[in-house]
Image (cartoon, rainbow, N blue to C red):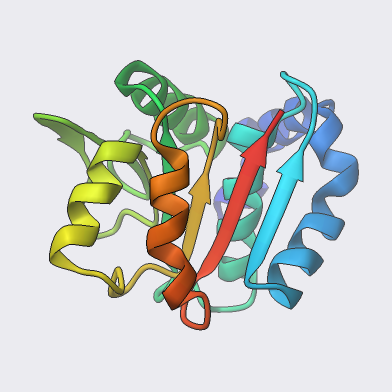
Length: 171
């Protein structure tokens, strides 16, 4: 129903102008084939906003939306909130916190229905202390690899690569 709306079609048009669009199928095939995917592209190519949406859209298309949970790390709180707002807009979500949300220190907009959660790297590290397997999480996308404590995050995921799909995005 949403896919047929004029607002969604308009947003798809805008999204299709981003360079990542031409690599959508390649990204999805690599993610399906390999437990670790590294995506590198110029700033502004759409890695941060588009790749997580591709993963969610594909899961929904394949009827796996109910079991899909994607964590996307951001190095800073303002990035986590602003990217979540942008992606929520692009997906024509009625409100932030439904399918697309964020979680940062002392603030979150999420619900039981949230499938795409943008959060700081610190939030993921804290979550790993309580749940080393990240139960229920199907994909972890680590964005902005050159910033923040990313090497520590990557080390935590190595033993769990058989149960998680892990993606690193860098410029």
